[in-house]
Image (cartoon, rainbow, N blue to C red; front, side, top):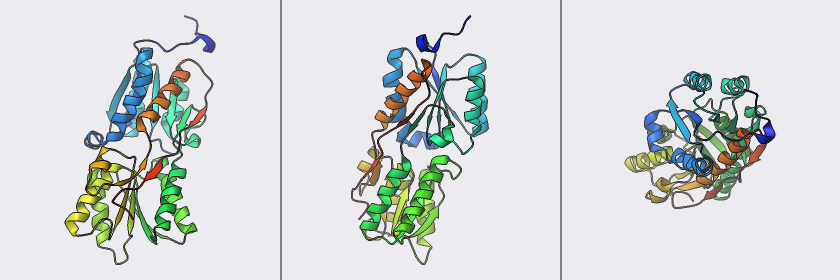
Length: 286
């Protein structure tokens, strides 16, 4: 069968797009972000007859094998790539397979693929500037998995902007789990010179830190300010409520859905910059 010209191509009704997500299943179950994100994508794609197929895997090689199998058996017509690593093999794979795709991440990491970028560096700069203006002189960053490109961008921006303001920084590694937030506060409590504010790469780690601070008698925000990334009901209902980097995650999902629909229709790749997230200040920070 001859290939359909790009100008007349259309998404195939009934054939899904795939998201092979590298996550611990337990962490994913507690993390609101992807539930909201997929809901936003489905709002765009399902009316086009394109369902979203989510497959949770443990490693990047498993994600590669899953996408290769999807393409081999015609199980998906396109894929969403998220949480990429620098030089990620998944980018080379979809190019080699000719599989329509959208990257959620840094355009440099996407290597020319259609991209939706949330401008994490802009949001992180705003957070550090806000904390500096509040008088903090020692900040900590609890990152996601260290090898992920967006973790690297956030950490690099965090440290650079802190240095511009003469602020000391202490890094903590995390994995998006509640336990990682607990570990960060436990480690902080053992320091002679402690950060007076922690910025987390997701809401679940911030919630774990809040609970551990209460257990250790560290007052929030009097002794320690906490800021989460990606606002959620978890942040809003916590006691005290968590300050958070906030954007409309379902709206982001819709933007990705529209960009993927373009890719499925043969449109030229483009980079779409989502509106940067903004800090919503609540009771966990000063």
